[in-house]
Image 1 (cartoon, rainbow over the protein chains, first blue to last red):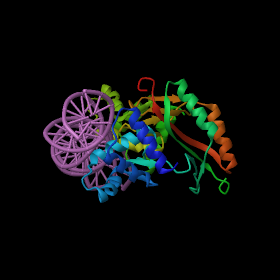
Image 2: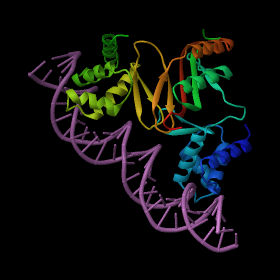
Image 3: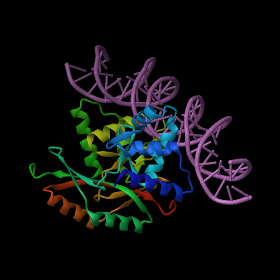
Length: 143
Length: 143
DNA sequence: TATGATAATGGATTTCATTTTCATTTGCAA
DNA sequence: TTGCAAATGAAAATGAAATCCATTATCATA
């Protein structure tokens, strides 16, 4: 998904929720959409401050929360006590399969699984915004 | 796995690491092994204090960290800022769906998803032995 | 374009889960 | 039993996350 599209989606989300579009939010979101790792709030704040020194921590925090709610960012906890946000990749969502012997990581997409997830969630009264799926096993070289 | 087995495994782990077996640790571990949900430290401490008022929460923290390291408990972060520990289930695996607004956690099992995971993995040359699937969205009360 | 209701901002402060400190106690091998 | 390293627990420290509040910005409507 192109960054322009993400910005458009965000604007749409903001409008639907009756919120307001601001220069700070736009800039924080744009900065975030340019990243392609799991960025922490601290790191993102540093990037943002390079151009706009006066943007505060709270605004970055709140904007990322918004992006998380809208599904445009994925909040992840890796167990180090810090929340990191992951940008949605350009070429759509993918999941990971990790070899528990050699640590090789392969990516995959499966529309059917995603569909089943939505259905399962629906039965439980949930509406899915995003998900994490990690498979662990042995790769061809290690089995 | 029976609780007695878990306790034995823990003792083994403690011995291997050159640590010491104490009454507090045993009681905390036993209490934890009796649970079957994602228990927070706070909840576990409350349970422990019902019988042993003087056990402090630092000890509960340290014991659960130990159980996590030994593989007898699984530390999980569902995004509400609290670490929860999951007891190894007697009756097999389940996945989680988490409300991103109120942090409610529901569990589900879906054989079809698991099957598709295996198939997808197979195509990539992998053999799956374990996985983590977490869905994030809005629960019935929060949508 | 001016207004007014309401949302957003940002610096500071507070909250709260977790970790550390430290004096004391306990486990256990010799 | 004794020595000593590990464990305990009360309290303090830590630090990420959440909130507060005075001020500012947005935007639908007049």
